[in-house]
Length: 378
Image (cartoon, rainbow, N blue to C red):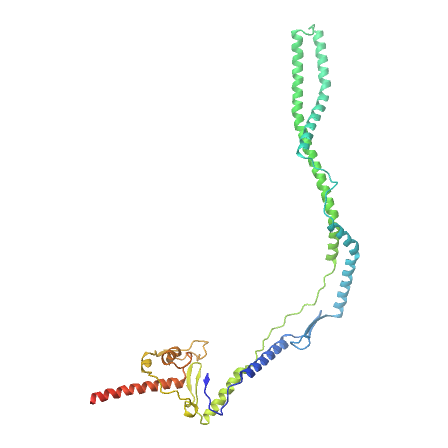
């Protein structure tokens, strides 16, 4: 609202003093909010209290256990300290030694390479065949002796065709047995090679696991001691309802007081005009005494502007400064008023400016009417 006050009437509030007063009101509101929200609490397990001035560095919230709860906490701390100190020194030295030494696998079961495995497989095949042949050979020799004795008893001389045929048949049978033995020796040798390689790998894995267990055991023991220390449980409190105390509207009160002072001066015979929320409101007259003015000369021609300005029915939008519940008004817009007549701030239309523009337009229109009448009578 823009108010023009007569000399001696209430003056506008000092902006610096008003800002300081509003800041003090805001701080007071913060303190009041803290007072209603930061309440002391008491539960079966302990208390929560606030001490010190609100907003000061010494403001403190303190949680205290009941005597029984404090005694339990002290015992828990003693147990935890005892557990951690039970083997901390030797365990820590072992952990430092384990972590500080690179992990190595020296002295573990070796793993055979591809060439070694191939040679090992061939040796196993040969050994298997040799064992089988050693088992078969006595039977083969016995078969030969029996055959030669039988042929001699039959009168078949050695070297004869019948003799050679019988011996050749026997030898072919024995050769077939040896060939079958060789084939089975390959499979048996490879199976034995696989078994030995798996046994070798299993032994190495077991040895690696033992090395890892040896390295990690001190760490696991220390972790178990840390986990075994009892946890400290504090009392639980309900969150109180939160209240917000708004600051005192000091600035609005100052503005209202100033407005009341001006209104009282007007009621005592002084004339004033104001603009409230963009709507012109007359307070009994306009301050137009020449004693209060600096004369800038005759007004410009406004008749053409009056012809161009748009006069519409409208209502204020909700939330706007002049909102009055949706009442319908009639009038121009401040932006076009400023553009056509070069007065106002483009947001409000002062009552004095509106009346002056209309009066100047009426004078121009009257002059034209008089000119037309004079021409008609001439």
